[in-house]
Image (cartoon, rainbow over all chains, first blue to last red; front, side, top):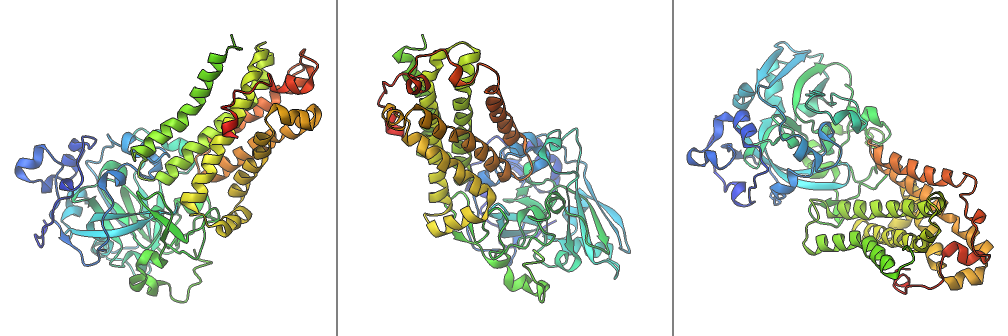
Length: 307
Length: 220
């Protein structure tokens, strides 16, 4: 399923792997990729090639990325999802792609894993809360999936929807936002090579708390635009609703591009903390440092108004 | 029993325990992925808790007929101020990196920071005038009036918390209710301090024994 160009040192050998991981969930989610004798000891690993779109900055320790999550379906405290999503059932799983497309269809997780070669993309990830991490994601460009469905020329936007099951996510109701979580991108944003359909991180399947089994990663936008646990993708003509924009349109715009010059009404966005540093001393970059690639998408737009 | 010195020392140690726990976590570098957020929330939580506890003393000493509870009120209030100072220091150091102009901008521009800063500014003079000497200097009546600022501080603290959260308002709502309850209890006849059948010296009736433990001063 994947090429063997430039195999790397597995992250599990850098970051101590502890027992918190739900191995059964990994085995179910990613049957394709485990390595013989290690199968019983470690989660299955993806064979990936490192994408040239990767940053050379060092990745944040895996333990932090798996235990500091905003995933309100599983609770609003940062350490809630790691605990409450442990038994999240992510198999079987399918993602429907429909709306203004010539070939609407449902993709099983197996099909998604084989649709394009898996790449490792080390991206900066900037949360709207003014912290950032560096994560080695696994996946391929979202465009590869969208092209399979053949978008209609009338399609201008892509609407995404997360899985929602109140039985598995009993804390969601208390979070203060509406579910299922929805978000959207303009079609040209979604087709940008940097927009990643993500199935793993640190060489392994996504853990439930990080949006298993398949999520979006849009590295030039604030983290909440990178919707987790996707079940529906729909191509549409008008700007689709976004959960945080519905919750508070003054604070969270449709675009939500990382922008040090547009403050969140309650805090400055000029600086960020590169976790786990305790200091907010890292200068935030326009488009999270991906301006060279994506600034063209927004030429002529007033990003202070269309934040 | 409430008058015993060992009890007071024990309660002092209990009040200090959260700070000691935090110190231990810092020493171990065990501060979650986001130390700034962890320390900020930890110290903020203990500030609002101590404000509620402080506000609870007056009504509960009447309702429970335990007038000697008053002995602990100053200590609780000083601990509220102590945790508020840690909270503020975290913000000024880790978040603002001692950039004072930036901080002043924040305070002017962002209502939740304005509220938090107002809460701190309101209890600072109360901590400073918490000694028996200051009660004498100000006179009981004026001292009492000044110390009603604690109501403003608690209300501002709740607003600070409420405006901070993104969507889950349960905890700030809980503290809001508790503060409102403590204030409402003061409206019950006989609960307010002035109706207390205590010694005539107004000041000492309010702050309890003027004998300070000394350790309290170290906090103010």
